[in-house]
Image (cartoon, rainbow, N blue to C red):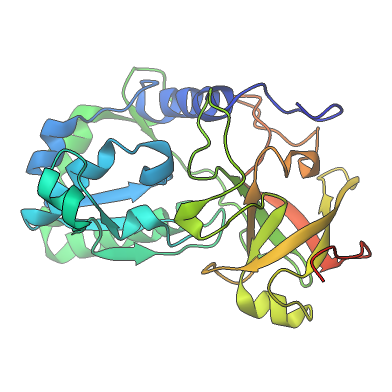
Length: 295
């Protein structure tokens, strides 16, 4: 734990405190409302807000089965992750022995960090417009049976008119999100490598869009200093991190927790769950004043 920040002791708090409270408000329950039987009948699966390989690896087998039967699988993530492409199903011995992968995605959509709700609102707008011509575009019976309007406590899902987050940082700034490495679970000791993202023996790094790196005169593995900007105007700094080019939208950056935790402003948190805003930190990244030890 980093003293002087609002960090929590383990990943379970960071994951489930926020999701449980948000789901209760939005859907009327703190847990998911689908199971694998629903997956087996779905024509389209949208994997959003989770990197299956890191956070839900048992999902990979079900995604492989869905792809084989012809389902469309859409991954929504600023990163193009390993789990959005292929997997080797572990209980298929021949596949394991021959390293034979199965596709588990048909489309990747890369919104900016904090842009997922804008994407979903755009999808809703399209469906509403389509329903004028095609009444079957929206399942109105399902909506009437399972939703309760806006902000009502009925144990059913609520629609929301919440203001959309600003996902376009001002000039010179980036939006930083924190992530786990491939073996970083809630209770394990994790390594310095991240094989899903091609990183070895390094955790003090920041993944950046390659054009954002060019704008700052940065090359791969260059040292950088990061400054975060809180809503109250205060700043926090980290120095001597390595810049790594990655397939990210412009204006976005990613780094590991807990290494990046010190950048999270103590006063910026969710009013519902009290969780630090670790996925939407405004930062500035500059070439570092720290001397390199990599030659």
